[in-house]
Length: 456
Image 1 (cartoon, rainbow, N blue to C red):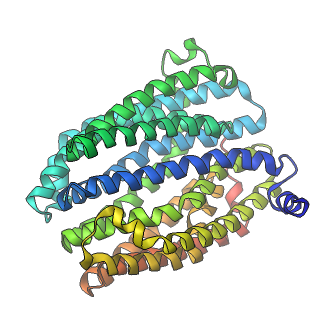
Image 2 (image 1 turned 90 degrees about the horizontal axis):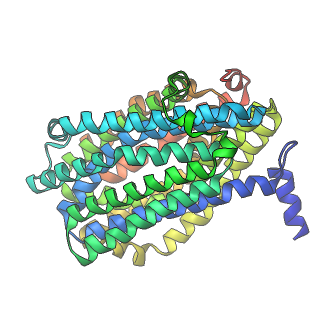
Image 3 (image 1 turned 120 degrees about the horizontal axis):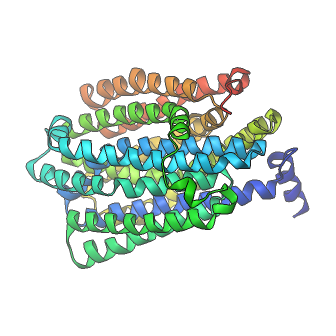
């Protein structure tokens, strides 16, 4: 036990924090990510019982949904970066103003997206997925409207989570996310499994869980008002100056999310061209692969406030040390996670009720992901969060967008569509693109430019 403690001290303690603080912050994020992915996994499995048209529709709209949600998630992340740096610098009086800009920025963004895309949903779905069958398109239109209706409420939750993570209150952020997703799962059990309402049931469950979670988010902010120096008078009206500052910080994150996920939508369009079975295969493989990404994804999320606070204290040595340790820990997590999922593949995949014809393709695609996870995932997704937390978001955005569009999109079209490698071809190209991006981030991190941008 003593040697293990020494190991933790060596790799996860610094001049201004120790491993207990790091894992105290990281632990709730891991649990949060575990339940988020697990609930998505179970929800996908439940809607799969409603037929191929239902799961295809949910998967198609899901790609658009991720594209849009990333915008107000980016606002929350911008708030996290600013709050972490002000908190690390000891400027507590500014925190309430940043919370104001983060919450109002996220909610207004969610509301605008809901209205605009609600009005244009027919044309958007027809343009993106017009090759899908009529049954799939009917379900897709219905599901998209239901998802959009929940946006302002989910945006409030994301803004609150971003604010809490900025001061290291990941436990409270976990409680909020967990409550929202537990409610979503429970409502889905009622509406899909028991009442057999299919896509309509998923819409009802989604909105009920988001509405209740938004009310809980307001209570969570009120309970932390002293830490944030937050008053009712401060929150009564929009602090436009701070909102603008939050938006400026979040622009690289939002741009990266929009264009990166825009590329993923284009890839989804190519998969639609391969037929309903390919759509189903891609949905199942994606849900299964996400299970092994739980801890590495949590590491990336937790790294933002840790590095942000280090930069706020001008302690770059600790920022470098914890980033390297998190990257190494992420690789170790993939070794354990993917090994376990490979062992449980046969019984686990039955939850999705796939047809026997696509089982070999699902297994091959996942095996490709296993190799790519170990080689490239952490340097492509964990490492850049350290750069973003230090204010280097513009660079990470440019690199991510260039690699996505120049390598992944073109590669998928050539190998998956033109050369006929299908979903396994998509997985292989995605993994190689992670490697290209990760190599560039490693080189950037080894230099000095990534921490020279001043945000506060």
